[in-house]
Amino acid sequence: MTVLQGKLADRDAWSAIGECPIEKTMVLLGTKSAMLIMREAYYGTTRFDDFCRRVGITKAAAAARLGELVDAGLLQRRPYREPGQRRRDEYVLTEAGRDFMPVVWAMFEWGRRHLPNRTPLRLAHKDCGAEASVEIRCADGHLVPPDQLAMRVVRR
Image (tube, rainbow, N blue to C red):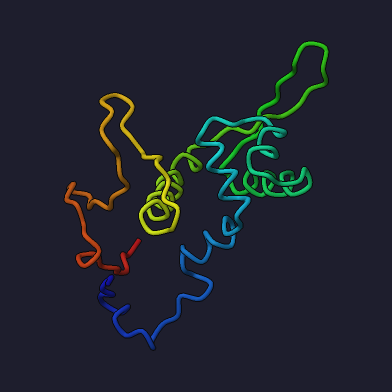
């Protein structure tokens, strides 16, 4: 359990509604199609039709989700033109989009371990081949297990 510290310890004295980063992230990325578009972007997908096909959504849904992800700064449009074709946009990850990657892979790892019909897929370190995992570490590099995680207010 995460420990709430300082003024956060009195749960009745404050409310996270509308201010919680989890809530704000879910508003932006809380749809299945948005998460799967991000997964596909991490796999290297950039073309609109490929997102539609690989995520299994309609062109209208893909256009809406991709637009939201661009507006949120996770993807950016980059123009391209195939010879003899009209100009089109491809969608590439931004720094914010790459920063979101551990969230998607944490969901992958949780689903792999806890949901039925477990997949043989594993995250791995490309260079050495060892299995990789998503972890929480403090700024000093220590692994932080769930029972050692605390939440506190930091003055800006």
